Image 1 (tube, helix red, strand yellow):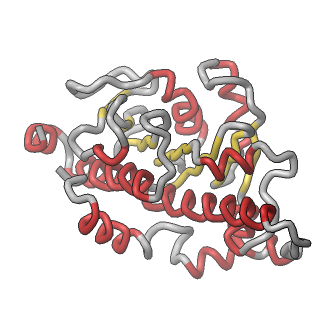
Image 2 (spheres, rainbow, N blue to C red; image 1 turned 135 degrees about the vertical axis):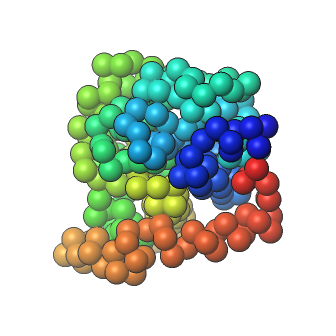
Length: 251
């Protein structure tokens, strides 16, 4: 299977497959997966309407570069695959990809801490450095039920705007990036911010929020610290972690 798929795609697509499979396994490694019920999608290089998505029913820690399924904007298979896909699960992703040319990768989770904060009326609070990074580029989208309705798409992309982070009320978290590394690192910070808030609120003591002007200046500082918004500098180390703890994603 591995050799067959690799022979049918470009080197650029194969590298994307390896990185996307790694992102799936890292989501599982950090405990943000929800059995098989969320997705990470990525636009195939040098295309407008070709995307990679997980084989439906495969747990995130099982995903490999070869098992990823190539689909069009309507989640129809482009490259023959023995694995099923979930068109309903691609609803949110297809909307974001269509609206945001820069959103080459879209990562969505139902993590417990993320859903917990999404259910709080005030949303994410400026309680941590991680939160300040997120708040510099965060949108909110109200819950409209399970995301199967095509009519919801314009409202969702309008709420995302040009932000990196989107909190789906009562539902979960979403990040976008130029590649799987950027989308994953953004989600790492998003999830950390939510986890800190859950723990801080559970402490039952008076909280000390970050000043608004500091939050406002955080986005530019993040670009410097992370060498180009989130991904590049940490990704090689994360791949080494996977090679030690869950190898085989690159097959």
